[in-house]
Length: 105
Image (cartoon, rainbow, N blue to C red; front, side, top):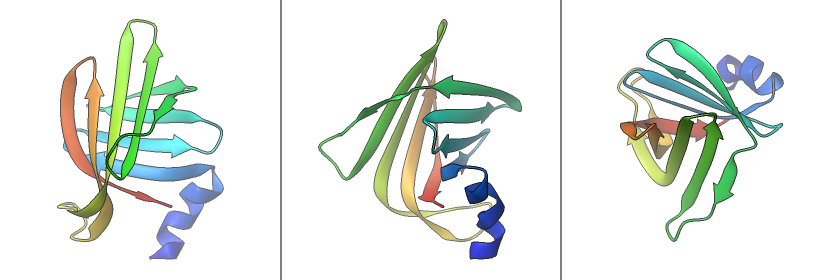
């Protein structure tokens, strides 16, 4: 299993999430790459917010587009792989919200 994720980690990806209609990669150099309905965009220098629960919140803007990523620690069954990932992830792009699972690489 580690071998499968190694190439992404080598490219600087430290965290990955996916759900219905999206994939997300958090990069070591402080940017987020979001693929939403097949369209990819990058968000640079996201603000990290420490919530009251175990997890993280990232907020970023790119012009008129806003992104909010909420990561909540806890088991999340990934329907695509059948594996249990380490966090529940909610992604809001311009206030359209989708949910999925995420984990550190």
